[in-house]
Length: 68
Ligand SMILES: [Zn+2]
Image 1: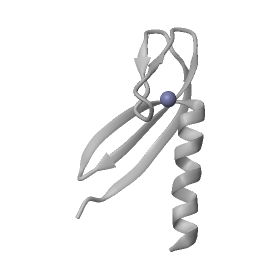
Image 2 (image 1 turned 135 degrees about the vertical axis):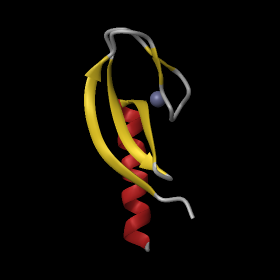
Image 3 (image 1 turned 60 degrees about the vertical axis):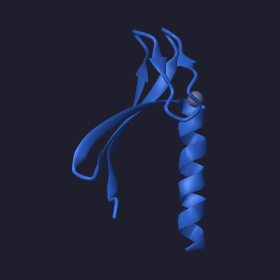
C-alpha cells in the first residue's frame, strides 16, 4: 500500500524555469507557483505546481474525501 503525506505547501516566485507536475507545462521565471513537499513511501518528494493547478488538485482531493 502506498502511503503519502503532505508536509509542507509554500508559495514561491520562480527564479528558474520549472515544470508543473499537474499539467506538464512550463512555469515561467517570475511566475508565482506552489511548491509542495510530501512523503510517499518514506521518500521525500517535492513537486512544483501552477497555483491554479494545485487549487484544482486540492479541490479534487477534498471532494473525494467528502464522498468517502
Ligand atoms: Zn499546471
